[in-house]
Amino acid sequence: LKEYEPLMKYNLTTKQEMILMLIRKENKLTVSEIASKMNVTSSAASQIISKLEKENFIKRDINPNNRREIIVTLHQRGEEFFKEYKKIELHIIEHYYSKLELDEIVTLRNITLKLERLMAETIK
Image (cartoon, rainbow, N blue to C red; front, side, top):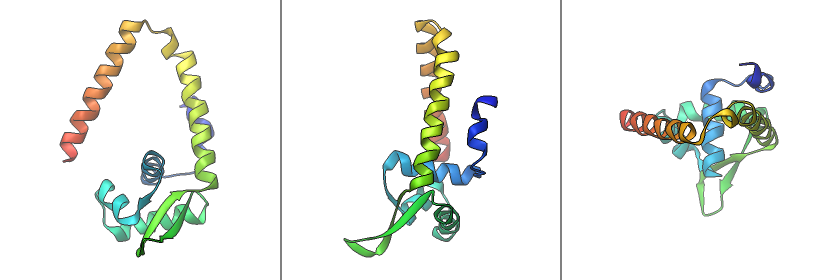
């Protein structure tokens, strides 16, 4: 937890972090796409998105191709959050993963990928 302490200053909930990670992964998403990926209603997603927008983590824009859709992208604090996150990940890699043997890293990767697949299947 000590390594992740700099992220604590952002005071984000798990759901807020999940939304930020989805947006970062996809670059831009509509509110309905976020709701679908999180398995919540559009209204619930909109409430979380509104809080993130107030804090400048994300921004919402009207889709020029479909004016009924709102496109959500990362904004200033969202970008800052992920810069800090990347620094922490690099620190962990340098201080912990770098001490593993290659076969241990391959095993760890395979186990992590299998767990990810199992979780994805469970969600479906």
